[in-house]
Length: 378
View 1 (cartoon, helix red, strand yellow):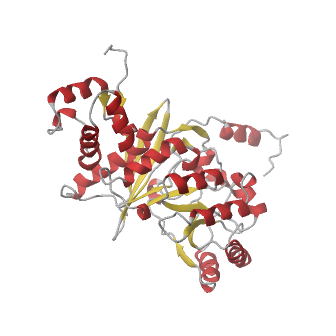
View 2 (cartoon, rainbow, N blue to C red):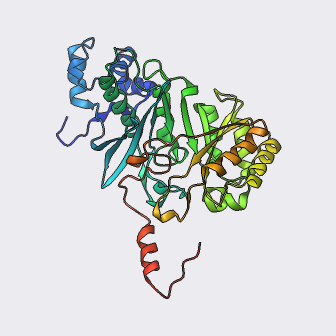
View 3 (tube, helix red, strand yellow):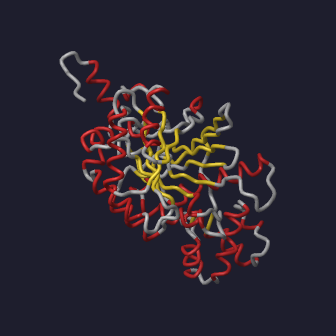
């Protein structure tokens, strides 16, 4: 192999893909399965440490392959035990993953894109602009690093998992990076990989309707939908993707998804914005909407985490409680998310990273604000 020839990062493949790669190079399928287990069950990146592989295969892998993690730029730790890693993905871009420990589970929030193109009004990541999709290995490398870092820290025995739940709720819209997402999900679910149940892996989407339908066929896991409003006019403003896939189409896709989902409900995420979407009347509209569309669901009300560019404020605890009570009185399971990691900017909607602002949106806003003849519209 010439010095210029690149090696293949084996984190790029789900098990089926790794078998195919091994076959192309004349190696048996069971060898691919062995390597897959070494990577994802034991966290081993050194081929020489894979003791049940024949020496010629180890030599081949050293020459043609690698198991490479993402470089960690920073690691931040919250007083509540939350850990946030900032990973370098090259060309000045970085993505974030967040480990959230709880009494009955440990959850990892994973990014799928550097930045985000959806530009929801209440999300700081969207205000940073969009740089690029992550590759499958870059998605899995976040889990790979977090799982084996926390196993060591927690002193877990071999075979004990540090991470019990994965949520694709980090930077980016997962369903706009579908080709890279699905192999990553399959590795998370694979018994030779991380062995997570479909109920414990959640994809969160702003509502990319065609990809919701594809996911139901290709790799149905738990689905969370960023709803945030019960009427199209308001959701158009908060979630611009709604202009392409309005509420009726979105909820119809949710209803179809339930035929294949590992849970019998869709989780609707609802960010509580003071004076914007938090009135009892809008809560009643939510009840009407899910009943009309016949979607079995639960609601997760999320306290907004303010950032300067949004111009928005967090709903008071009293308003959140009153809103939740309307849903509960209608018999809809409703929870209020506990804010975690906000002292390290790791809470929901705060993952912004150090992505390049490809759209130059922030600079344009600053220039417009500084010009007395320019009037900003909203």
